[in-house]
Image (cartoon, rainbow, N blue to C red; front, side):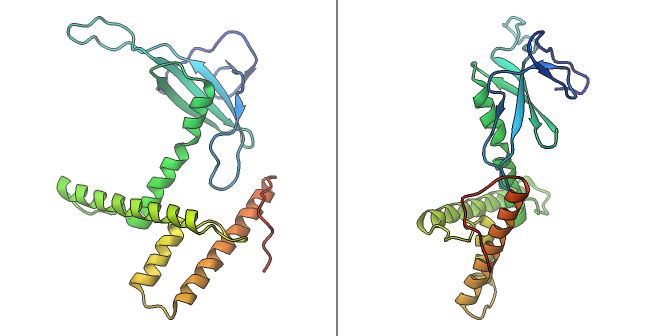
Length: 223
């Protein structure tokens, strides 16, 4: 939505105030999206219908509004009060829960891009031609897909024991680097450091959950 634009708000109903004008809250407007990577978060949602945009008519067509359902989804963090806005379009009407699910899963895409950049240098190409850029990007994405498949397979076949987090792409990348690219004393040493990092991360996650007032079913880790 343009910074200077305005969105119409329904006239009736309960309202909450934010950086936009008050808008009616729909049933089930407080919900949890997909699980957050660090700790559960609770949001309140507002859903505002928007008028379809008018686009210039193409040759042989009438100047009619664009079809489908246009709306503005507003998310408020109940802990911090931070607002996030999502301009939504669907060819057919969908329930509010569907839009919340899509908005909540957005962090997965951001996490994937961040992992590809950090672990595999997706954004570290120093090329000027399209062919070279295409080769670099394709190779980085293939490597990311390989790490993702191997990590998912290891999680399914070898679940993490009590006191350890599940194997992550970052940890698998460290193991590949240590075992294949560096001279290490023994395999046991590499695996021991891997277990230590995962145990430390499990304790950090438990502390983070407790600080935010959430509880996990994982046993307390003591060293």
